[in-house]
Image 1 (tube, one colour):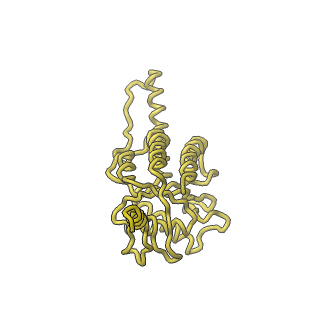
Image 2 (cartoon, rainbow, N blue to C red):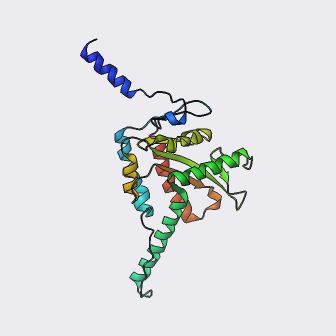
Image 3 (tube, one colour):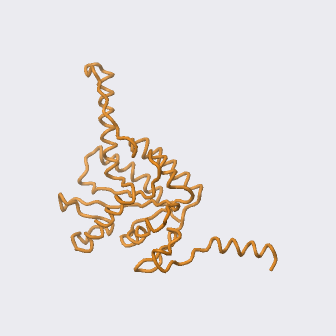
Length: 235
């Protein structure tokens, strides 16, 4: 065997992901075992990852003041009769509402995201949901006419050990939730964008349009626009 053939063989072995027999054998979130068989999730390219994170910062973090580091604090404007102070106070009220709205639509972190998906699983298994709504939707406890839909899951491939998130691809597969896998040191990059150390998983959810007021509908459309863009990047 020539040196070039040996090099090619090494590359193939390096790029080959063995099918794990159990959760303990998982090496990457690209291939995880499940009750329905192995679930394969291909990572996007490094170029697409950069674009996705850049747009996440511009369209979500900055526009909605979405951060995990410190919540927005209300500033006191001493003279509300002053036109400029009144304008600043009104703008601040809107920004605070947008930040609160985004945190109800974007779920971050392994524990929070797992709880949401488990809640969806319990609702489906107990037959609480109406058959007319999507598989990825759950009825709001406050009203049977209001429901929440999980529209997208973003995972970081560099999470270690991979078993921490090995249940996520299966739950998403179960409810037809699109999954986008980011390569490289995505958890650090997402963490930096959100003002924390690492972010391994992000879930996006939406509320039924009939339950939203006009400003909320506009904000939801802005988030949905980003979600639709990301879905198109899924391999």
